[in-house]
Image 1 (cartoon, rainbow over the protein chains, first blue to last red):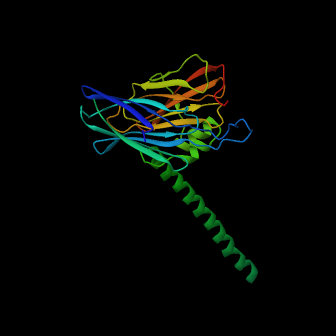
Image 2: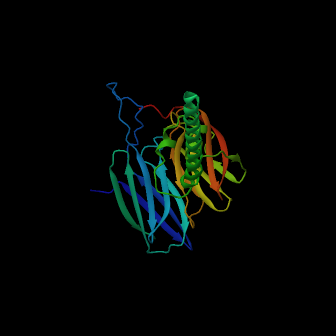
Image 3: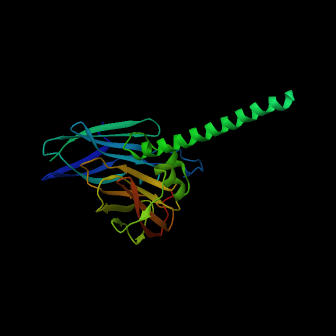
Length: 103
Length: 162
């Protein structure tokens, strides 16, 4: 199965820029479907980026993060070819993880 | 006689008990605040459940923020679709440990909170939902203090629809 996570990590000198796009409904639990039934909350709570055994970025998310979340950040200390590990867990206990090579 | 002397120790005991409970409470608070602020891995469930912005900030950080021009919040003046509002923040502050986003009139004010470990650049871009035209606040935690920037974003179509 294709991963729910799409990542692009590019190193420019000492700084690595990371852009991630995750496929997730991010339901708030406040919206009703066409039958008038509440769609239960279903959203990513924590998203983690790890590089060389160290957390480089941790996101704690609530329901106000848009559907199919996008995030961008940069960090220092990695070089081309290093591996970036990305993982998320949602409020229903589901999770996904992937690794990306820094280009 | 016996009744009065009997009553005094009890009252004292109760008072002492109350005092120690109060002290314990204070102690817990004092310890909990730095623990929360530090880069621990725990998901701040409580903060995400707060409806108001002030309550959410208090639950997340245990203190209040002061406005700072060193925090730069970038968001559109008008968002056509409240379901996807691109928002980013950058700062020139040193020793940043976290960045959080609050949307004042959303059902739950805290939208996202990012931990910034050493070596990570204090700048984040993401996309948030906004229920209606309201104030957006970014808080940067730097060197143990909180700094904020706010911006009003007009929303033409709310982010709560289906």
